Length: 403
Image (cartoon, rainbow, N blue to C red; front, side, top):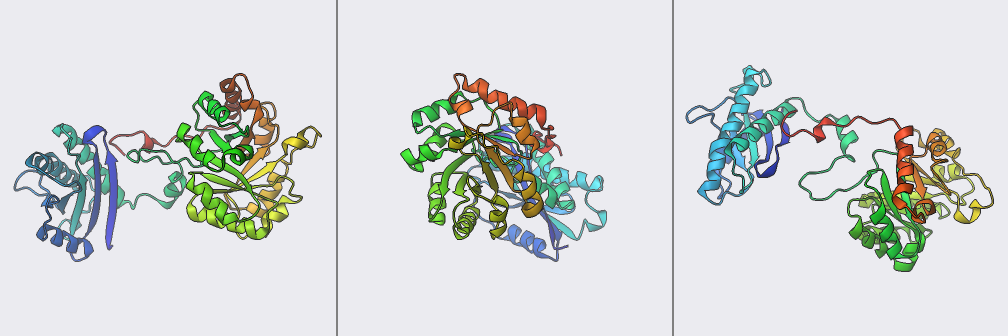
């Protein structure tokens, strides 16, 4: 073992505790950092040996390092009092409970970096939360938490409590994509304001809207819907990287390229979107053989749209939902690519689309031209509730101070 790493955020309010810690051998890098931290002091971040009470340190010894600059004795007392005692007591209890091997008490040391808010007032809560955070961080360090499976599962579901914003990702299909195709910003904003609250709803800045207002339409929609996933339906045919960059600068979460574009353009489009961390979507409207087109690409997009154009709906042409299964079998295989379907979808046809493998239902006029936008939207959400098994929640997202 070189060293182990643990982290935990526990509690709420100004007394919230966040502990980062390193566990390692005295003879290794953690031991070196421990000795340097104890001998090279810095103003406002003075490390101190953790003690359960004066003259009683735990074993392994712990170095408590304040994360926030200490500016006065009132702030220092919170570190030298409840925070220090909580960290030390948590380590002693972890030894008693068998979490830390007793044969390592004299060869290991621990460094615990502790966050104490300058406006924290309640000493009991400071102690309580920092004790729990230290125990949880130790438990995680000793078990090499988190496993890769949890990281991959949660990375797009996670919402950081201090970040102050939500960055939506498409991690839990199905979704209802509302196409704001009417070239009126006032109409688009009215639709957004009348939508019900749901994590299943994503928005599309439609091509007509973008043609009238430019890609800045995305930023205008973002002002009204800051936490909703927004797609810029560019239907790019050329200058792929440039158009992705423009949409990215306007805060688009995803961009759409036409499947009729050249293989080279689509490859560059997908590359640039991936480089910038936004979703690439290929619209297969009027593409004769979507399976062949996808098979030519260097990298698969995040989403493929099987799109029946508005102008051909009246001809009775059937949607190509059956291609979802074929694409999965011949092209996708292990990839997590999502499938969206568009073209006159209603609550009555939605179950059939979901059964065919659709992850995203793109709906425009049925909702945006409805006299009751909220009711029309809920009709689709109710279909999702009926047709899609409920996924269990992750208890980590709801707890304050226990693992």
